Image (tube, rainbow, N blue to C red; front, side, top):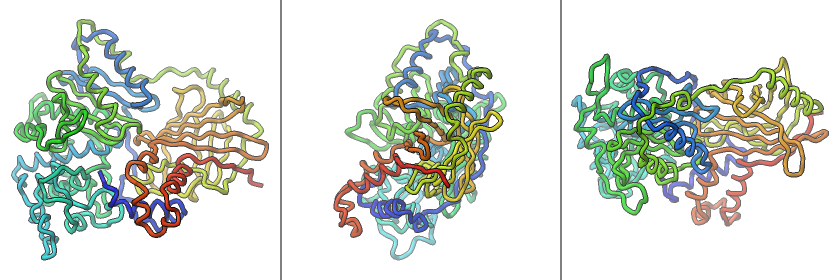
Length: 568
């Protein structure tokens, strides 16, 4: 992870963001995939006919989803290669891919294994030999010694990392021209730009676009369709993050690794990645000490102390492979978990210790995701109730003079460099039995349908923000606070992200009191990676003298409380 000395530019940009100077942000927009496509739902993962203790697996999974410290949105499990459980928390479903974050580092590793098997490249290939245009007289000595193996095992020690990449146009050039924190191979330093450079190395060695190479050798054979990978400013896949995978895609990757690189194609076992590479990939290559759950790192995977393998992405994206128990577990999280050492991975390990398999048949109806039935009559009654209670306020346009949050959560704004300046108007109306919220943000007007029957009655739709299509699900309800005041509470879930927003609105005669909250909570990020000593190194912050100002402004960005007045 980035150390504090690398974050000065980040803090400067956060300052510009707070002072509404987004035009000065040195970040790039437009290289992520703009079109939304539903996830492919195939039948190539076989539902298990094995016997399982009735209700036991369901009960354990329900414990995962009811734990607020974990905040799961999707869970899938294979036993002996066959699907025994798939469950999604409303409003999520198998129709959507999810940001995988660092899970895709393992996909890069598999691509490298294939390239090695085909003779295009070796682990000992020097990175500088692949990019002679950067092998100048001023290239650092350590960089000349950097090999593919160092990138793969996170032992490169290169100074250029995720944070610096946000301020760079040519990531490959700046990586190759960077200092090293230590000689390659000496220490473990987790850096997503290592995976980016691995992708660049594979493309250069094979002479093929990385996504084309993966489509041909991995995705098409495994029936993984329409996989997307966000790109760097130069148009190359980001490597260490930015790939969207469905829960079933994640299970397939786990199954491939558990099957030693083989996949059944047309009824025939086909070796997609060599057994030798998978063996070394899942073996501890780097020792990691002083961790509760982790003992080492392999080729793009974590080695856990229970002898299992973990693919991990920030905020709860995991693929857990336990060969002894013959299980693969995939999880999609919703923002609570940051890293592999968290409660979610610990719970997965404990889950795998349970004796799940007995002699009662599996209950598929309860075990698989299903859409609950909806009562049209109850919906109409709920709508009439909302219409009656909000009648004096429907159609009014409430305008904000202060920052009133943005429609898109800040985490997604940062990940896609898709920045919004904030909501300046909001209104509500009911037309043709549809409850609408209309808002203006950054010069764009959004008309969003709001579900309202009960908490399973989300309204699904696609909104377009700066040209990017984003599927969302919304739900609204009228509740009363502890002082018996009526408020409208609105949930907006971004179905491919880990992000969601919650708006709370109190109505008065000619104004509203508006508040907003969102996940992930970037305050936690700030507390981890930014400190007072760093701020004091920046001249413009000396007058502040404390991180309190940054935290105060961050809190106002993430959790604003403002007044909106009727537009006369």
